[in-house]
Length: 255
Length: 318
Image 1 (cartoon, each protein chain N blue to C red):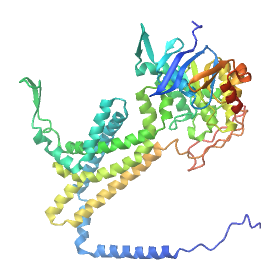
Image 2: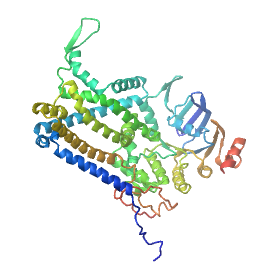
Image 3: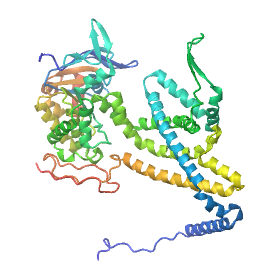
Image 4: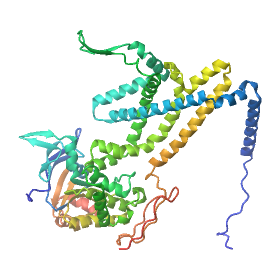
């Protein structure tokens, strides 16, 4: 069933009280695709990303990852809330990278990476360590395994955070503005790692302000504003010939 | 020599008021000590005689045991109450709130008197079906409990209310992102709490808890309220009543309290150091000039504290 899309969001609605943050969002991301979400802050792009691994619960629509509804089970036309352990199981297959890295400061880099594989997946410690070193090699930081996160630069921390997410062998990676908290000269090293990941065939959804990355690596681009998707399509088309006036004015400011 | 590189040799600024103040205070202290040493009422020979008295050192040990058992129980209960207070479950929230309201709102001395009276209030407890004559069994719950353990319970139940607030503050001090990162990795609520949130909150929890331990050590002197009389204060009072000498035994008790407090402070220091790991960097490791080959990174690590904990990073050329 490889024709099942990795992420299928169908008319998603999310609101906090009376404030509607997402209004009727429909997005489909195919296996192996890199989808980029851009838009002004407050447009709902981060919220949408957090709905995909159920850090936020949606109020309307249907959201499925790899064919399975997220956070709910459907029997007939009734939806049942999933138990916390079922939600955790779903999250284990979806990697997430945060704007503020969120490494565990009381653990070394290595401990950060093997924590979830050993505790959640029950992988043997020796195997988890071996995988961790492979991943650290991949992000170019194998020599930092025994160091605490506070000793690393922002760019290094974010690369470790990516390695930590990859250690769970996710089928989907979510990036929530992964370079927004970085000094400009550190952005490149993180984008390089993400590019490598995209080339390896990982399905990725990236909320970003890096237009260059979207243009170069993205397979599809979604421009969000005010909780709706204003324009979407091939990144090169959208970025070069934005049809919608709001897209045009946003791009004129960031480019 | 270039004057810019020469170390400065200047006359130090003088602080005449500081010096004068120090002299005055020193003088007062010497006077007080001299007076105290020679004053009859202190009965120093008796202090020396009873300081190492077996009965008193044993009482000090019992006081320490009361403190430790009560604190351990209080910390466990406090953790439980804090987690209940922070949970989504409104019932648990309300229970935790009511507990704090009750035990923080009444003096510990009054509580201890109540604990002492529990045996009389609940002479027997019957388990059966309410409003019928059916009875399964009857017990006298407080008759069997040793006074020592009753004192531990009394102290712990009071302290748990304060510990709950300390723990709650500690848990709330951990950034939300930590909790989210753990959950995004598929960790359960329990794993997230035990492995990620609680260890990080320790840094915030331990200093005030150390104060609570020391405070608890002193609060143990109140357990005579429930009839327990083997701890340090009650014991020294009993001895002073026998030999008609109050002041020297109060001094003996104070010396022992100070001694135990000092030991506890040393323990607190090492605990704080342990749980501070990874937070206050000991030393920024040298930045690798050749790093991924792409961008030369400058690690933005603060340069504070002492060195030697972090092994120097290996140079890696790619």
